[in-house]
Length: 509
Image (cartoon, rainbow, N blue to C red; front, side, top):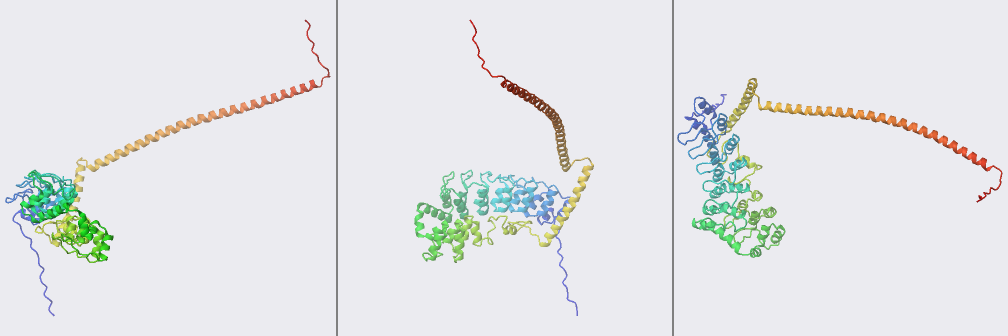
């Protein structure tokens, strides 16, 4: 029986790159090393884009190449024609892993470009909330202004980056900071028609109308800007807020008691209204909202859970086209979002915590995290890169031990040796102090023993003196008793003399 034909294994041929910049963009560390060894500069500038190798590594997410360049002394302070450092490019492209590597190697996260923007401004503008969090965790100022007085919160709002906006507010960004024209973030959100950002800012304000009444240097409110730039959805929202302000809440509560109960989290009242057939579970108010919209917006989890259990429709949209999940996301009610099925369908700009499993799906180690068109390595290429990195660790560890030995033989003193000597000195000092203490205690003991001997001798002397004193007292007592006996005998003899009356005669004159 003839053997079955086995198809030949497909061998992937490596592409040879014309320039070292192309090798870095493709993440080919072997060709990068070979080209640098052949004479290419570690800080060679691309003649077209004026990017160095480090710039391209940060831009394309070539993490392994970036580590290699940093290890071999690539200059972190090199800038492009727009004064962008590698950190600026990593922020623009959302390369979190590259940003972390740059920060760990001393990159300046407060460096400014030609508009005085820092990496945090650019990360906020491009909606890279994970990269922005990395920058903020490194100690960057959250309210730093650029040339126009715009802070990262202005950039996030102007570009409609809700996730970055929420992150910045949690890190202490002020929603009332103004730029050089007197615009607060709400002005920019209204001007650009970013209703979700405007609603979030209004919710975070002192009151519902506090933010909407703010005027810039030209006397314009957010509503004025929305009308000037024809942002009708924003104008309609502001009109609705003003209507709520001008009309008492009691009217809405009487007309829609279930909505009011869901808004307050009053589950008992809500259940009575529904179970007694007074209201329909999916009843809409004058804005098209259901009780589930109200509960989701306020994060009333118990009411929301009960509404889901009895079959309330969570796909109904209000007049603004929002489902209950959209309302929960707008008010940053993350628990409500998760309960409504948002954990698997969140948008890329939403903020996720480190404890969320999806964080690791979107926030990987290699390559880009927020961009889909950047460098992507296959499973085999990743495995090979890990093997190279592991071997490199072993090689560098051996070289480090050899270097330490050579340095010591040449008379150099390592920091470890200095620390060890300091510990030895401290130990010797402690031992000396303990010996001195011991000697002091020994002398003190000898002195006490000498005093004790003196006290014992004095006690012995006093004991002898007391004994002598007692003996003398005893002998004197016996003499006294003999004397008393003699006196008694004398008295008895006198009593035995012949009787008679003795008369004393008076003396003659």
